[in-house]
Length: 147
Image 1 (tube, one colour):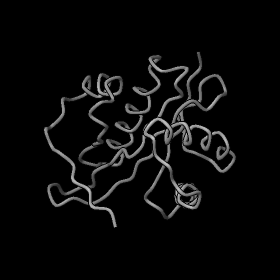
Image 2 (cartoon, one colour):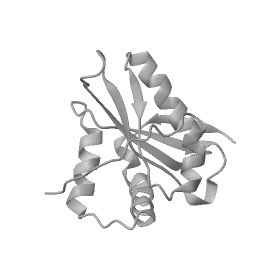
Image 3 (cartoon, one colour):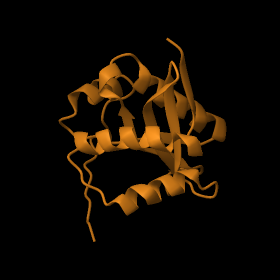
Image 4 (tube, one colour):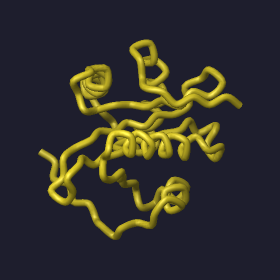
């Protein structure tokens, strides 16, 4: 098993799009195509803070981690927010999610960022098992207004 974690490149769009659609289906979310296209465009834009790391297993794209950094009022250096993490359902449990998180930890440390954080659905027990192996939930509850 040969696993590579790397930045997304323009030629990865079709592979990512398949995983992205599976991710949206997992969360029962329907997004307009222009939102998906805009997300990809921002990932490819070197000026954007939005970045994506891909997990490539034996030449196949099997997972992604979309993240961005932002300033904080609680620390001097930026935080890294892991917005989307997804692994192909057929290979879950093989350490790919952990490899992507470990990769973001290394990037955060290399760049001098203060923290890496994320959230998940409270009923996503499989993911929570992985996440709890890093740190227990800090008890914060998210509130979201949509406009």
